[in-house]
Image 1 (cartoon, each protein chain N blue to C red):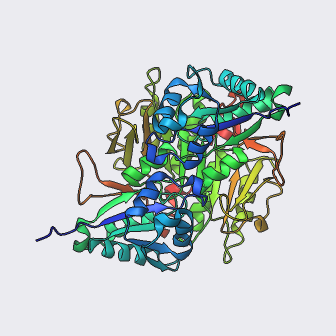
Image 2: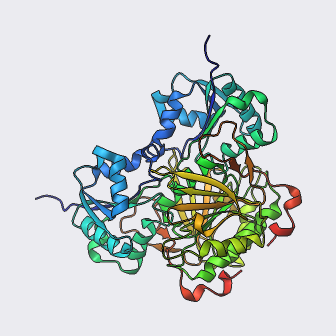
Image 3: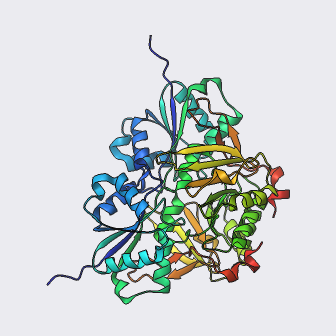
Length: 274
Length: 274
């Protein structure tokens, strides 16, 4: 007689995409996995990053829109005693697959899943990689907002942008645009300009850590919907965010962008008070 | 004749503290460094994590309060042609040393520093490690606020808490308390309770990835200033954040905490509209 195997579901992220940003934990967890489940682009990226450590796993890839089905499939596989890595991009806890796993476990739990051991592996998020390339725009209080209205009403997005703008947070926008959604960046810009100077530094970071990486520094006034697509992160500075010329600029590099850790006394009233 | 060496300043973080969360990039960059500069606790932690890769470096450690002096010292060393790793905790771009470097380069630049090449290495932040241990509390829009009023007026902190509470963001509090500061958590709690239910899940994460790690789940109502110190991160859920019982709870583990990726239509008005 053998003991009934207890399956594992390991939720991992690819990190931004560069092998040097992949945590040793994810490398080790994926090496133990029997199965990889995820959106094809992310599973392929993970396998590219890990090379031999990801070889010989059964791959189950699907379309990006079937997230909840993918979670159920991964839990079913794990319940059979397999060690399943569910693959997300970036950090799986930030707009990634980790929340989808708990949504299913909460709202539609199946008795067969009871013996599945769940582990979430944190990673370097795309926004921290983008921030590091640009300097230190996230050096002080900041907000992270998804501009997609696929999963939430646009009024909620607007309320959050307005609140973050009034309270002078640096703001990171995920999912600023897609082929189906183009107008959100312009609308966000208009809301931000009600509270923030046209000269506010904006970082546009695309594919950081991957082929075709590009980081560009512009201003809120010059920000344009055409600057962003689904692979772009947009970081909008606070009233305190500044630029510094780089002494040695490589091709295409703009100035450094940073947000000081201190906040001046004379800004404690006015716009910053919401 | 030899070429004048061009020094390097590499700003790295320890990550949360566990070796499996240290990026290969930081390991490689520190291996190349000739000098390590930083607050003693962080330099020691980095050396513990990296072991042999950090051996043989000249260590320059100082008190935590001398951050700007430490930056100047690191830049001076680099300007002599050395490869200097400036060590922060977590991700150096989030309330870390990266912003301090640009503050100095912006406000007090020295001609000798012109040839120093600056690199910021992103890392896994403490909040993502804490979130992964707890489940997926950061699965949807969130704000990150330092509760310290050492570097900003408390009115700015309050305005940000109120704005984040009204717009229904999940909120991560860094620096909730120190031996000198004890009252901020209670004041933040009072502000949050004006907009959020007493039963709102709260994650208290202490020393995640280090000795003595503890992650506890409580509610906003039960949150107490005594729950937090300078090594604690506090994550306060939004109106949508939920808990799910773990089928297999290890000693001391509470329920999973997660924030769904979707936001219900019927919450698009009222509290969420600021």
